[in-house]
Image (tube, rainbow, N blue to C red; front, side):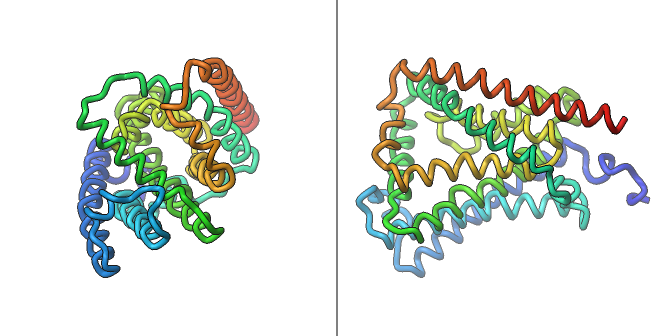
Length: 304
């Protein structure tokens, strides 16, 4: 009888979907960590020693080892849990459940890309605001260690390293994280809360919190809000996936061609001068979002 039910009424309840998904994510993190340590061991490297000494001056072999570790962690923590959870919920219909079975209209892909790009200065402004908040020494040590790893990974001396970084930092996270946080968690919260705006906000907060990088918490919430609304308005997961990939990929490409300028975008190098560009960015982001919403409203009127 289940195949005759409306699509939204099939599978576990929304609360169970969230619980199962997060359970799979945390299990995947543990498994991914073990797999990563095993792979690095085969390569003759120790994960703990590698992370404690890794920096911008690390050699190519260590940079690629860290990129491989990041790839495996994302694969096990997000992509596999997303596919497994979706299959548990809807079996062979999981791509329809994830809203990945139809190609989006080119105009929404383009507008989603524009929206994420114009939102970047506002995200940087919130990043600077976030850096003004005091954090315990233990968290600051964790933040500094993570920052050193990211700086080391972003050292790229060849096009092959650029391609590897785009895969690890842009393509894989965009697909995997959007499937988890927008395709499952936000969609489920919409059915629980019956208020799409609250669902977008809560999902964005969870999206930011699960990354465990507190200095960039507000900036990642901003990113999650933009991606969440793109999914809510277009009802096609490929739109936020592309926007997410563009957001991450643009920073990787900038680090490859303009490494010195990227260094100037760190919170320690920012001051209150980021406020005006940030507020202009916020206004432009709202304007692009309003335009997308009007386009969708117009389409609904035509097909009504």
